[in-house]
Each structure stands twice: as structure tokens, then as C-alpha cells.
Length: 143
Image 1 (tube, rainbow, N blue to C red):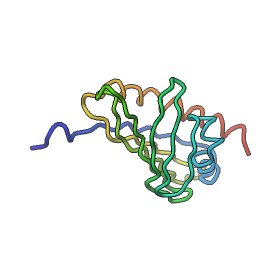
Image 2 (cartoon, rainbow, N blue to C red):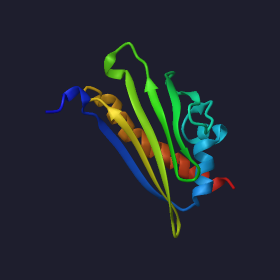
Image 3 (spheres, rainbow, N blue to C red):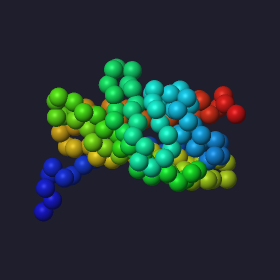
Image 4 (tube, one colour):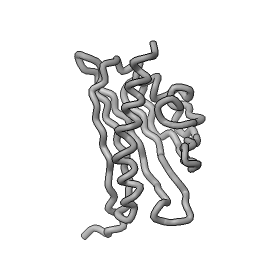
């Protein structure tokens, strides 16, 4: 029998992007580009690099790069410490890029939402499609 505290939920958003994996990879790994579609950050694509993402609402996400496979896969922790345990989030975001005949299949997964984190889970379900929309807009206007 599983301990209910160990059961977590995952948000997955998949998109067909009409740009090659190399271009998409740049937008996922260059801080000035990440800021345009996600949030302010001090990201570096190096396993073990700790970085912060600053949210518009004032929160700061404490992150660490977990996996870097250029043009294929990027994974980092996405942690938000909060006084209220329902908002204390420990999760992992993974981007998987698969080349297609017309560009790239992008799969974004954020795993680790506890059952009591309905607001955080709901926010991610709404937020990630919006972030990826901004990512596509960025790709359309950059070289």
C-alpha cells in the first residue's frame, strides 16, 4: 500500500514547435531568452548549477540543474520555500526535445505536486501553456 504523502501529481504540456531543436534549446538555456518567455533568472546549462528564478509576484524559485543533454533534454529542480506548507513546493521540471520533420516535439513535465498542493498544481496547469505560448512567440521573432 502506498503512503499517500508519497503520491505526487505531474503537469505535462506537449507542443509541436515549428523550429529545430537547436533553436529551441537556445531559448531554454540562455538567461536573456529565458527571461523573455519565463522569468528573470541566473541560469547556466551545467549540471549542479544552482540558480534562482524570480517570479513577477515576488516569489523566488530555488533551482538546481539536474540534467543537460544538448538539444535533447534539460531538467532542473523547481523549489519554492514558503511559510505555508501547502505552498512549499519541491518539484522537478524536465524539457524533452524530439526532432520532427517540421521542427521539434517539445514535452514539458513538472513532477512532484503533493495532493495538498491543489493551488500550486492548478497554477502550473494554467501557467505552463501560457509560458510555452510566449516561448513560441519568442522563437518566431528571433534568429
